[in-house]
Image (cartoon, rainbow, N blue to C red; front, side, top):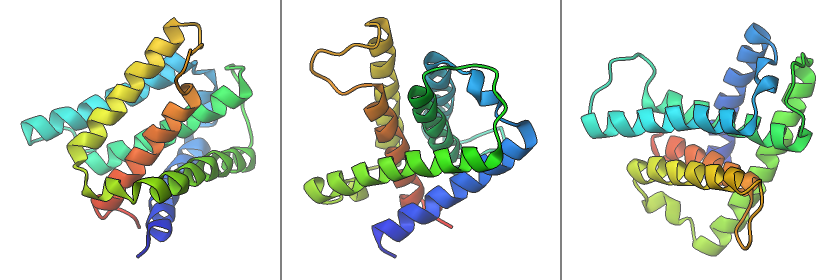
Length: 179
């Protein structure tokens, strides 16, 4: 399989989960502000790191499930940034599906550009590094929020969400969990 096929396979698994949960829960996630999305991703990334360090888990969801959850929360974060109005808002599944595809297409285009320049260096990285990098990106977003959303020279919140999404997809690809 090539990178595009692997990426698409991993994302499709994530989207399937996202759409099923949307059918179960509606769009309850629309109430989440940026810090809440960051905290949800943080919980998942920290759980991955803890399982990696302890080399055992007690809750059923495995590391791959957590990376899939991170992908989906990163999409939520990107949608919420674009809409810029977290609120109680029930939306049709078709609209959610379109928004999901739009955000993933943006993240995938970024991945393709970076893969061109970096030569797919991620293929040589460890799963532990992906968890650490996700945690670092979350800390960056928290700092940007403390700076009222402003940066002097650095990328914004959206770029950090894109990297988080792509690191999670890369981890899924390297774990062989791509559908």
